[in-house]
Length: 113
Image (cartoon, rainbow, N blue to C red; front, side, top):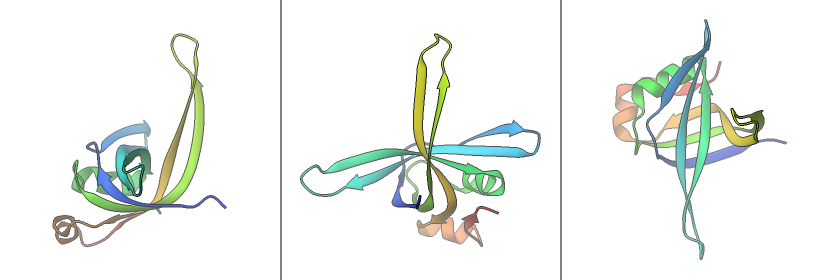
């Protein structure tokens, strides 16, 4: 089962790209606190798609507190120098705005269709 649930604060602003004429992807880093002796934060890459991406880029800013439900995805590619690169990210199915200012501005949650 590939299920991820995270609560944290945006470490970056949301960036959106159009990957096809009718497909958009928004990406951001989510800072998630790491409790215990190894206290600190983990910075997790998150991707959202289409309508959810549009809502996130419109209403979320760096520092916003959110909850994300989704799945892990690992992808790999070859960079311009011919080196093999890999990245692991969370593909969000559901983004819940936890800041009061975001809940007041949007009448709904960002949910993948």
